[in-house]
Image 1 (cartoon, helix red, strand yellow):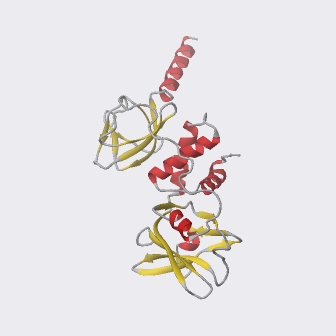
Image 2 (cartoon, rainbow, N blue to C red):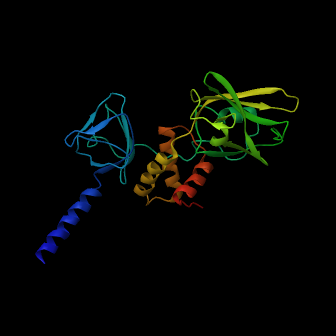
Image 3 (cartoon, helix red, strand yellow):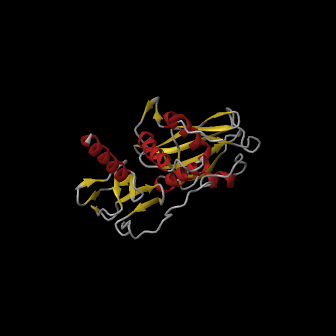
Length: 264
């Protein structure tokens, strides 16, 4: 009986330590950061106390961490004393990517396809087909550089929906390629008289979706008491901080398929 009591006490202490409000869970690490006393590297899923000392192996190393009570924050070499940082670090975002409705003019397209633009394997964007018809003679295409050569790739579509598919985009002569020379990419529209118009140039980001799934799961598990729309806001803000802007509808669809996430 005494042995059982001791075991239960130990289990209680373990659970209390693991899920303490003073503990943080690592979402993502860029660079190398150690728990100094334990000489253990931070990685996705690591749980540590706010009292633990962190050793940044490089000045530009960062860690995205989260706490259910205090929220999410980015630790840097100049800002990592968790006992001194006040609560509510990084706000959630609800309209980071694009406004609702279809894209109906050049300015809409330029604003939409700008900066770091995140696509999760396959991406769908509703277009105004009166302004931008899509058929065999009217279509959008992207152009990137691979091994020093400019590669144009026609984008697929279905009705009024433009589709960016990583598998189709990153292939040359029918063979998949690992990645272009860089993330810079140009968007063009070809109209019926074969006149091409360059819309914009931006950085197309395809995150490692297996890794991203683990990162998003940590956020959802930690913030499970929030309403679903607020959870989406937290995830959107995280992706915006770590990767680039993302369209909400595509993110929610990806979360539903990969994480069983539901939102009305």
